[in-house]
Length: 178
Ligand SMILES: [Mg+2]
Image (cartoon, rainbow, N blue to C red; front, side, top):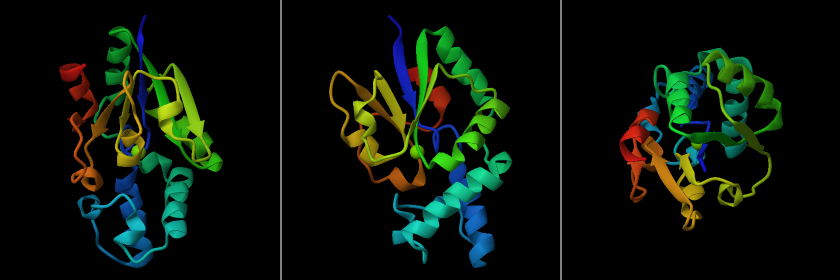
């Protein structure tokens, strides 16, 4: 039977913080870079509230989805190749409902063809969803994963201090470790 890879969207497929930072800089007249975001809770680093930070995320998805880069070129081809290697691709993403149409457009524009697409609106942990392997950049999503499920950390500046046995820098690194 094929194994299911649950792949996070924000900061694993879509490098949304690049666009978030750009939006933040224009709103706040500042000059920060993605590499400066060294904590998961951005509001603990920058003069911004949690609500405002989240609202920039939604605004970026709604108004600037075309500007959001993928984390790697040809990401659709990488997904396609994983499928030919008999993995089911389940995109598992926690987000606000109003961003859904734009997520769909973004995935289409990047030719990302998944087997299912699961939106989480509440605080249910990702660990309870059906998958064999989770790929995520958020330490709190990985921490609850128990055997026989596995989790792979997707490297981002905000998780460099999180000690986790399997870390990848780009999605295509999966071919090396799966
Ligand atoms: Mg993420």
